[in-house]
Amino acid sequence: MPLADFDWSFIWANHSLLLDALVRTLKIAAIAIAGSFAIGLVLGAARAYRIPLASQFAAVYVEVIRNTPFLVQIFFIYFGLPQVGIRLPGFTVAWLSLVVWGGAFNIENFRAGFEAVPYRYREAGLALGFSRISTFFHVSLPIGGRIALPPSINTYISVLKNTAIVGPAAAYPELTHTASGLIESTGRTFEVFFAIGAIYLVIVWTLSGLIRLLESRLALPEEAR
Amino acid sequence: MLGFIPFWVEPVARLMATEGLKLTGKIAAVSVSASAVFGVVLGTLLTIRWWPIRSAIRLYIEIWRGLPIIVTIFLMYFTLPTFHVVIEAWLAGAVALSLWGSAQVAEATRGAVESIPREQHEAAAALGFGWVGRHAFVIVPQALRRLLPPFVSLLVNVIQNTTLVALIGVGEILATGQRQTERLQYPAPVGVGDSHALAIYGGVLVMFFVISFPLTRLAAFLERRLV
Image 1 (cartoon, rainbow over the protein chains, first blue to last red):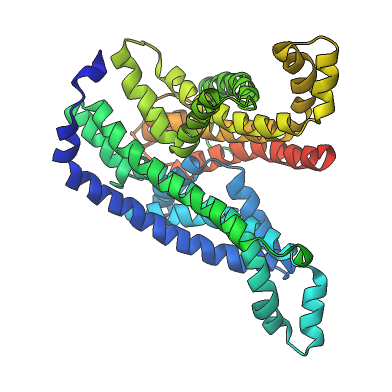
Image 2 (image 1 turned 60 degrees about the horizontal axis):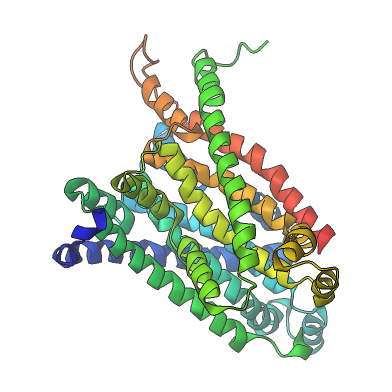
C-alpha cells in the first residue's frame, strides 16, 4: 500500500520551499488579476457602449482568446515570439499570458454588467445634467460594476488556477512547477500532491465562498433590475 | 499552385494532422463521453435528499472542480502507477479530464433535474415507476434537453484542455507541433536549421480556433433557443 509510508515530516521539511513557490503563485496571480480587471473594465465598457474601433477590437480579442487553448497561447508567446526577436523571461510570460487570458474573459463579465444597467437610469443621469462621462462614473459604473463583480471573481479564480499551467509551461517556479520538480527529485508523490492540493483547494474554496457572500450582499434591490 | 508554401510545411502539417489531431480527438472523445455519463448519474443522485450521498458527491464535485486541471493530470500521471494501475499517459490525462468534466456535468445536471416540475415525478410515480425508472425514463430525458448547451460548452473546454497532456509528454497536436519545431531547428537533412515556432504554434492556434468557434456559436444559439 503506497499510502502506508505517508510522511508528514516531509511536508514540514520542505515547507519553506513550498511557501516561496506559493508566494510566486500569488504574485503572478495578483498582477494578472489587476491587469484583467483593468482590461475588463475598459474594454467591457467599450463593448457595452459600442465605442468605435475599441469595441470591434475587443470583440475579436475575446473570440480569439476564448476559442484557443491557454497552453497554446503560452507556447506562442514563450517559444514563438523569440523567432521575431521578442524574448521574454519566464516571469514576464507567466503574468503576461495570464493578463491576456483573464482580460478577455473579464471583458464579457463587465460588458454583461454594463448592459444590465437599465437605460432609464442613464437617461435620468443625463436629464440631471451629468455629462456622458460623469453618467458613466456615477450611474453605470456603480450599478454595472456591482452586477459584474461576482462573475469577475469567478474569472479571477480561473486565473489563479491557470497559474498552475503557466508555471510548468514557461519554466516559472510557481507552486505546481516547484511541486513537479520536488516529485522528480524525491519521489514523494503523495506528500507533495497532498500539500499543493490542499493549498489550491483552500484558496479556491475561500474565493468561491466569497462569491456566494457577495452575491447575496450585493444583489440589487428588486426594483433596480 | 501552392508553390508559395515552404517545403518544410508539408511533413510537419501531415504529422500534426495524422498523429497529433488523431490523439487529441481520441482523448477528447473518451473524456467527453465519460464526463457525460458519470456527470449525469452523479448529478441525478445529488438530488436525493439523503445527506451521506449528497455530501459524498458534493465533495467529489468541489475537489475536481477546485483543483487546477493540470494538477489533476499530474496527480493521475504520477500516482496511478503507485497503485499498480498501469495505463498509458494519454489515458491518465483522459481520466483527469473526465474527473473535472464529470464534476462540471454533475453540477449542471442537478440544476436541470431539479428544474423538472414535481407533477412529472408524481405522474411517473402514479404510473407505477420506482425511483430508478422514474428518473431513467421520465425525468432525466427531459433534463437532457436543458443540458444541451452546457454539453457543447463542455466539449469546447475539453477539446481545449486536451492540450494540457502535452505537459506529461503525450504526443497530441501541441506536443507534435513542439517536437516538429525542435526538429526543424537542426541543420539539414534532419531539419532546416531555422526556427519556425511562430508559424507552427500560430497554426495550432488557428486549428483550435476553427474547431472551437463554431461550437461556441452553437452553444450560444442553443442557450437562446432552449431556455
